[in-house]
Length: 179
Image (tube, helix red, strand yellow):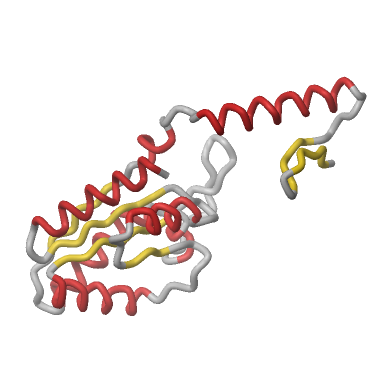
């Protein structure tokens, strides 16, 4: 989440440094907006956070963005990539890994904002930041390493006990084997 907060901070600097600017950050989260939500709360200067779990009204988003730019001079919007399936209808195609290909919500929302502001005759600049690979490439911290090692140990114990078709996880602070 630290890298996501850095991206939000950069979008905020861009937005407040330019009159009539929106800093738009697209964060990872195909089906869950947890990274976007946590980074938004940590950054503390996001004006709108759009999550795939939400029922989002594009007209309300556009209207609120216009209000923010008119009153504050700028805005910061965070959108989780899963909104590419809730705001836009994506195709049913899948990628090489079998995951559904989502429409790219970042550039799409950028174009929606620019078009709406143009219709309202308000000048707008949108700075789109997509830190996906920066976030994904962060090395594991100490807590991640300990957690992964413990999961691996429990998986080996399960295999040595003769179990197959299981996975290990943590439930209520206890490591368990799940069918």
